[in-house]
Amino acid sequence: MKVVLDMDPGIDDAMALLLTLNNSRLEILAVTTVSGNVNVDKATLNALKIIEAAGGRCGQAPVYRGAGRPLNKRRHPVYSEDIHGRNGLGNVDPSPRLRAKEEKTSAVDKLVELLSSHKKKEISIVATGPLTNIAMLLQREPSAAKKLNQLYIMGGIYDNGLTKGNVTKHAEFNFFCDPEAAKIVIDNAERKGLSIIASGLDITSTSACAIRNDELGMICSIRSKIADIACKILQYPLRNYSFFNLHDVFALFSLLYPEIFRTQRCRVRVYTSGRHRGKCVVSYGNGNVQVNRQVNSVRFNKYLLDGLA
Ligand code: RIB
Ligand code: CA
Image (cartoon, rainbow, N blue to C red; front, side, top):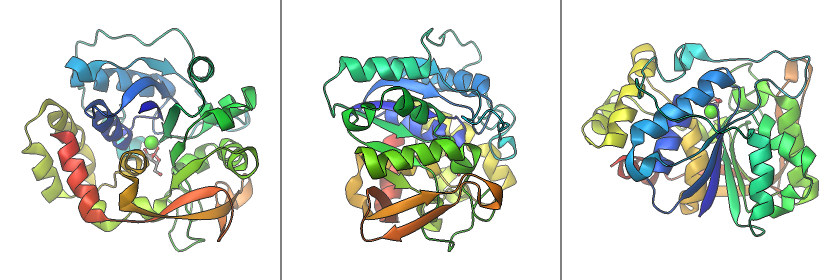
């Protein structure tokens, strides 16, 4: 499967990147970066560092810098260095003597180029940061909605207020950072044929899938190059919090293991302003957004450990 990862690494993004690098079923055409957990300079550097640290066949993935700020120029970037550390990888440097360089092409230019040089429905995107790059692609190339195979996102909350947001009580971080981009992407699913599978905070905060000290101990005992990187970057959040949710791994596992999720089709409306900024209002039963509602946590955890071995 040909895939593009669009991300704001960020520790959970980095975990999804490590699992992708280590999975022979996936061919990474591009890693595109976006401002989110950290600024886009750090996100781009972190993607390069994780890929180089993974090394060997795993260390083959070109990195393209994307948007450094939200679509709406009046908005300032929002970061979450409190959770991910100042450098975005738990203040760990996985590649102290980094040799790799980012590509010269911008993220959106590369996405346009990839879609024009591949057959329809050949490429899927796993987007685990604010959706700025994806929205810019859809604005520039309206045909992208139908050319893409699937867009797997981590973002939003889809249980109409049962799960509280992690920025405001209404909003999840990726949708809060760039609500205009989230609205454009969701509206493309509703009206332009874009096929989206969304994992929101309501499912990604499933307690049985969270990393606690026991799970960290299991990851650190795997002793593979990939698992050793994961072991190092997860130390920081688990020193500061009793658990850490691998939100972005849900978006990747929606692509790799769809059978472990129960999904529902729904119609989603994204708020972009005021105190409801980034909020999703959902009506189930029809609509064109597929939402992951439940996960088989035993299978999720097994695939996580197997994927790091
Ligand atoms: O709300 C969780 C999301 O915001 C995750 O993608 C995390 O990496 C941050 O980007
Ligand atoms: Ca992310």
